[in-house]
Image (cartoon, rainbow, N blue to C red; front, top):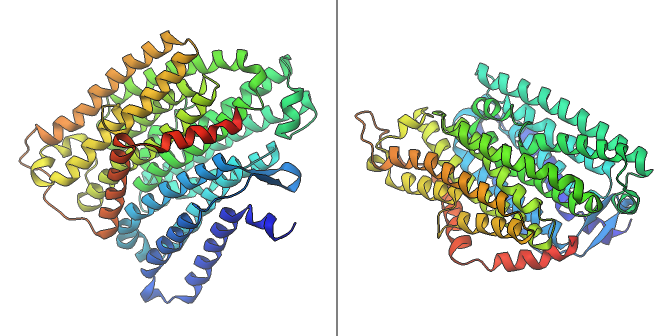
Length: 475
């Protein structure tokens, strides 16, 4: 492989280099200056994010195991932006609580290792590369979920995540082995021409879909979600909610729209049923939640159900709407989790009742949370409205009018529980309201970027047309 071949793996190589630089810096920097590791990691990853926006050609490596094109490259950039925002929002927590325990560098190494696995997963050209990427993206997050070692609930979250992930991984791997047995190849391009509606193939597809549904939190593979989100650090809960889920949705979309395109008459019925159950389960359970992390966990489950509306269309429009919705969802959910993290870091409060009267003491944070929740609910003119609208259009274009109607009903349900938080912040009064506080620079910058994304993608969004053009690759 020549130098130009290495450039096709530019993002992977740069991220691996950052990990090695952080390991070296951890050894070289004295204990009294460990706080500088946070600045160094954010600076290096910021450069990596900027470099990622340089164009890259379509090609493959290692006999087709690794492939890249404009849409895959764009989605890696989407993940980079999300992780950069998450790092900005996590900086205060790391400096105040984690660096003092001499574990700051481990956080970045585990997080970037997980992101590296996602790179390989979405660039995979065969099931071997896919599975290696899947494992590399999952195992570090289990350690991160248990990162607050002084809290029993955090250790419990890590154990639940690793056990659930192991089961899902085994199911997915068994499905892959059945697909290999029925087609004689693990390469996506070869399998596209060999897949047929045999019982062995269909069983392999169902098992593979089930294993990947775990990462997306689709019902009935969602049971781990609320407990892990509640126990994990808020930054890791937001990472699981947007970055991990987004990468899993993207690779699932690629495989269903290419490798399993000929079996669409089978998997569309499966997706149809799971979409309905996932939307209702996420929304109805969200109504009962008081803890904000559990609240956002069930909200993310419901959002996964909405994503399936684009998946079931199996068209270029469906591809574009899924990628666009995930982009909007990243900004919206990170804004909500960012406010929760800022409040939790300053006060330790994480329940919805604690937000009563928040607008009177912290109006800016209240406005950020309101915009985030309005976007998640799909209220115009913020970006979430257009994300959901395009998903509904994609499903309706294939004649799924009943599914669209059910989705609209679920949007109404979600609007109710999102407004519960807005009511607590703006309309309720409390004698013990959260006092005024001012977050540090990194957190303010992270929230500002999310607000800009929510507004710009909603009010002025030529990026959707750009994504639509890129989506021709898989259709």
